[in-house]
Structure formats: structure tokens, C-alpha cells
Length: 129
Image 1 (cartoon, rainbow, N blue to C red):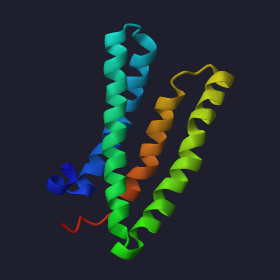
Image 2 (cartoon, rainbow, N blue to C red):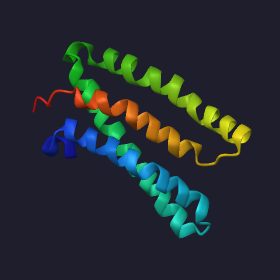
Image 3 (cartoon, rainbow, N blue to C red):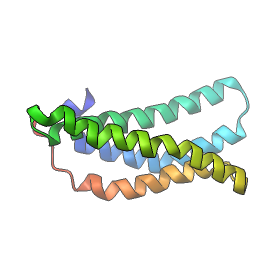
Image 4 (tube, one colour):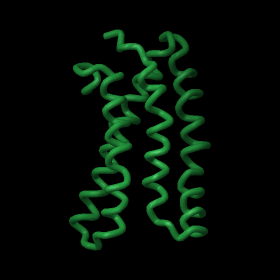
């Protein structure tokens, strides 16, 4: 919805920058605070960061394909990588946390992912709408 007014390029770049800047403080808060109210607010922060980026990404992929091939293109470019890569990330992070004892690892992983995604987001053209 927001991308219709702001443009998906700006929204995606803002989401990636927010993820880079806020992931480590959010994960620090998850390890520091023990009460339900703070933990819920921090989880909502992570959900907001993820939903803005992922929702915008689906729209970007949808605009890459013509209408007749949109369903196939969307499934190949979004659903398959999300299930294979996204499905294994919690397993990998859990294993690395268990091996290293470093509970902040998922926050640093999100920062690294954002640093990889940011140059690609700057290469996007403005939305067609």
C-alpha cells in the first residue's frame, strides 16, 4: 500500500537501511530485557522490519514479469529461494549460536544481509506507477 505513494524503490531502501541500523539494538534488547512487554515490542519491531521489506520485494518481483508469466516468475523467484534458503537460516543460526554461544549472531546476520541487499536495491528503477 505504501509503495503506491512512496515508490517501491524508496520503501525498499528505507526498509534495508532500517534493518541495518536496528537489527543489533533489537537483538540486544531481546537478550537484555526479560519482561513480556519489552519482548513483545521488540518482536513487533522485527516483524515490522521484515514485513515492509518482504511486502515490497513481492511487488518488485511482480513488476519484473509480464502478466501472462507473472505467476510462474513470482513462484520461481520468490517462493523457491524463500523455502530453501529462508527455511535453513533458522537452523544455521541455531547451530552457530550453539557452537559459539554468541546469541547476537542473528542480528549480525541481518546486518550482513542488509549490506548485501542495499547495492542491489539502489540498482532498481523507479516503479512504473
